[in-house]
Amino acid sequence: MHSHSPRLNGRCIVCGAFSTSFFAGVKDRDHQRCSACQATFLDPAQRVPPDEEYARYCQHRNHPEDKRYRRFLSKLSDPLLKRLPPSADGLDYGCGPGPVLACMLREAGHRMRLFDPFFYPDPKTLDGCYDFITCTETIEHFHRPAEEFTRFDTMLRPGGWLAVMTCFLSDDVHFASWHYRRDPTHAIFYREATMAHIARRFGWTCEIPVKDVALMQKPLHTESMYESIRHRKNLREDVTKRIESKRRAWQKHALRKLLAPRVQPFS
Image (tube, rainbow, N blue to C red; front, side):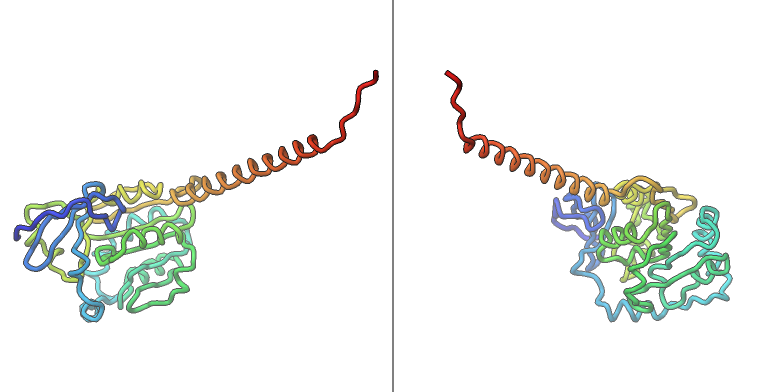
């Protein structure tokens, strides 16, 4: 790692807090750390261009018949399937060129749709609502994670599940040699605490059933933070309208009283 002048109070791309500072520089790649949510992310100016990103993804060789890869994905699918109702509607977000997880979940009786900005880029998929969303080995590639998680909250039905799998950062000492950091397409690294922070932001629950997997559930009846904000805004607007209506009614009443003919008392 090389030394670097700390850049304080930058805005975190995960939680939006103005609480980031320089964390580590490895060769020509600088990383920031947010003290609020504990996310660590690459300097946006140093991300690989989309054509290089696409070329690397095309090197992935994931096939439904690959038993080792299925076993790897079962770290997420096994605990998720225990929580899903029968015949649920799911979205495999960031599925890549070989959507093996979607295949496994279809085999378990669930309806699956696919989205990937490079390989399955149908924007209509993002207009749907889902009982669960899976995101395996994907969130580390996000360039605008705050927007992505907000989109998940919008697409999830009440009581729905967001299931993510990524390699959680747990060892700062060996960050420079960490295999996950060395992948040039990995732009952001999460801790378990980061996932809990994201869940709190939207009012979700969060559990870590196994290493490197987080299952987050949207509440059935309570509002998300953004729904709550919209609701409060609507209430404020309604109260303002009622106050204005009463003010106008009072002005009309006062004006009628002022213009009304005065009756002389009997002598």
